[in-house]
Length: 155
Image 1 (tube, one colour):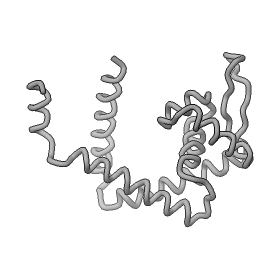
Image 2 (cartoon, rainbow, N blue to C red):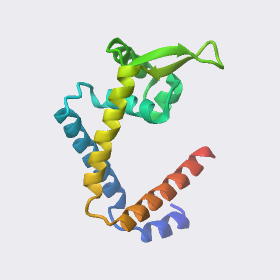
Image 3 (cartoon, rainbow, N blue to C red):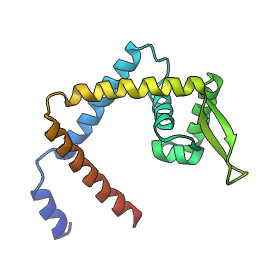
Image 4 (cartoon, one colour):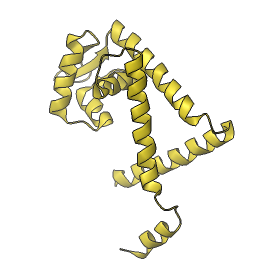
């Protein structure tokens, strides 16, 4: 291990990585419970796909797979299921006639809005013990961590 890594470890709280993972797991658990309570009849991967499309708009299957960290073959099966339920449509890509754009249908857009609202309620509850300033600081810290990780992965 190099000196920089050893020095960096000395500056963060013990178990910080595990704590980040636990927060993510608990947010996922709370989200699943809330989606179930609202009668959302999709599995969590399907929910994530619809939420991502609702938040970011139409994208190619490859872009969606990458944003979800999902295998392309598994994504195709999931998209087939969501299309059969009437939540999304596949349209020709305007810039690449070999590719398709994944677009939410009208009912998919309504579901996406509902999923985003439920997710926001879960997050509001999770953050309810923090002041507005603490929430801003936490968001800033997380954005900076994300930017550092993304910059490293780009090299």
